[in-house]
Length: 296
Image 1 (tube, one colour):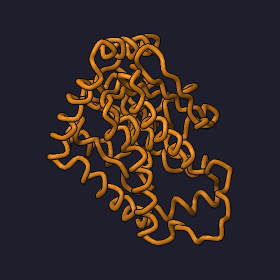
Image 2 (cartoon, rainbow, N blue to C red):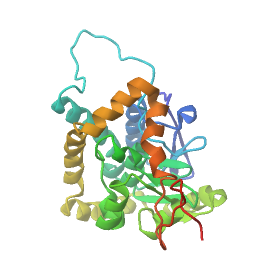
Image 3 (cartoon, one colour):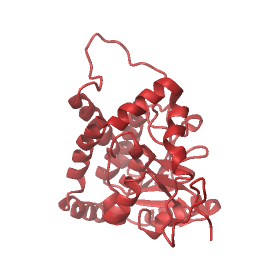
Image 4 (cartoon, rainbow, N blue to C red):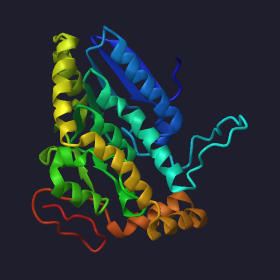
């Protein structure tokens, strides 16, 4: 399969999969997710591959779902398709996306998310389904659409950072830096941005020393333990819960704002009251008159 929206390469015992829509900040859309799922299973089938590195081209890892679409309409084959206009259509489409992303969880070989720049909304869906996440200290991680665009359709947060921080971030849509994300366990660790690639590649080097069958056995027993705690059932429930969230009055107001002001205008209206939109892990959250955190 040839790829348009991702780049795929195998070398040195690893597959590097790069989200490759830098002009759209690597925003997710159906064609990209289809290619990603295919590449993940291709890597899992390739005996040369010990692990997968998932990363983004350009300034960001992934800024979320492409709410403007890819610009290419699906071919009209005369078959009436789900449109998302009923709650069941909505759930069906959310579950389809979840299944594609869940390949990161279900594939036998381990994956590392390499996070730089923005990792927002749907970008966190990808990252949190990877086995390990290494972030740049100055990365920005969060789910701002929780403010007015439904609930989180994938929800692995509680298994990484616990219920209180999951609530703190989801109930406000605020973000944390990569450095703070490491403090609460949302990511494995953070490093200075100029050392990020070397840190990820160094971890991949160490896994390249290990028999892939043993990597698989040890990944899968840990994932099975999380499944016994309901991790994958929760993802199915998250899709239904997001569809419920899409029926909230605030979501209807958001789409009205998009029609009136465009996406950028609707985002500005939603987010400007939150100032810099950041949460602080250590110490009090003292903010200036514009809602920006005051540094110590």
